[in-house]
Length: 417
Ligand code: AMP
Ligand code: GLY
Image (tube, rainbow, N blue to C red; front, side, top):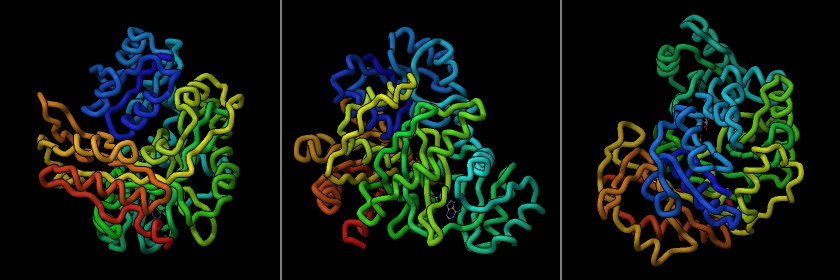
């Protein structure tokens, strides 16, 4: 099977790594990719938001399957163009990707499917926003309706900050605050059958102790030793299957990866958000534990054959990933700095720990930072404590001037707290 992966982050590196280990994959391509992906896939330059260009590339490469990683091309309708060209694609249509592209749309789907989520108001002016904020009280949860690269949500006790964020958004969703630990649960779906992956938890805030601004994600771990073993079945029954059924009922079936961001509240599970693609950095730890070869799973979803698939096989090991971010991330990050120590990780820590590249590029013999989140250092171990030790040992070998990372990824869970 010839596979083309679209995207350039650590998620795409993790996808490519798993695909490269799948004996069914005879050729692996990625566009545009990064310095790390270049070591395992052939890279191609393409405007990933241009469906015709992506489709032309897939045709030229004779790709049997295209996997679209990020949300922006999905929301732009790239998967539709590929499907029209008869190319199997893992990733939802433009209409189905609205479940991530518009928070108001997602709320509407959930209301129709009876999926538990935070009570909310959609507001388009300051008056509406003010009364919604007053109705719910602090802490205030204010969400830009559209895509905002993980930075469109403000959760604050400061009413002025809440109003200021609402004023910045054209359309804003204001909702009730959900208290409780967060879980990311991914499901592969062909529009009908729902195949859940293992749950993970990510760390959205920039600094230790969940301080600082929201980011795209600073680390993740899986499994969740503190979670109820019945959680996955419950979420499939109350959230994922009803949502997939509702999308099909609307004539816009969701094919690809449905990501449920959940809060485990004292009143039960509530959806915080849906995403229309694999989450980053949770993908890095979920795929580290998946033993079933990945290409066949994604192909079965793309072609409507998920019901025929054998149950997924999972490693008993735990996985932890730690994101190394550029100076000043999630503000305007500094880029172009050399990264050293990658060879030492490969020589001393593999196969238990490895580096997945996000914002990197190669210049001659050097690898340079090229984005906010630069690397995702991933490790496995017999438990979270061992996976954590291995991940941080590897992080310690890497040098990137001015970079920062959280030191507390999976710490509480590893300590059994
Ligand atoms: P989202 O982009 O919707 O995932 O929001 C980013 C982060 O904001 C989430 O991971 C939560 O930590 C937080 N958040 C979003 N909605 C709520 C809510 N209703 N209650 C509490 N925290 C929330
Ligand atoms: N881990 C958060 C996201 O991928 O949106």
